Length: 125
Image (cartoon, rainbow, N blue to C red; front, side, top):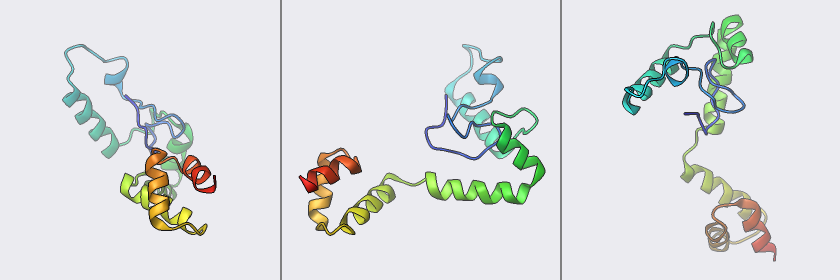
C-alpha cells in the first residue's frame, strides 16, 4: 500500500508515497483486513510519528518548525490533492490560452486520454 498522490507527512515518503506503518510491514498478518489497514492508516495520518519516520526531511521539519510544516502540508494539499475535474479544467484552460477553441481542446484531450502533450501535438498537427 502506498500513496499515488504526493503527501507531506513524516510517515509517508514525499518521493515514492511509501507508508511507514507497522501493520504494513513487521506486524502484517493474513488475519488483518483492508478495513483494519485503512483505519490504521487514518490514525497514522491524524497522529504522525516523527520519531519513526519514512521521510526524515519531513519529520525534521515537523519536530523543528511545526508552523512551517503546516504551511508546506497545506501547499502540497492544494497542489497535489485535486479532483480530476479540476485537473482537466486546468488543462483545458492552459490549451485555450494558446489560442485553441474550447471544444477542439476538450475533444483533443479526451482523444488523448487527457494527456496534455499528446493533445497539444494533435491540435498542432
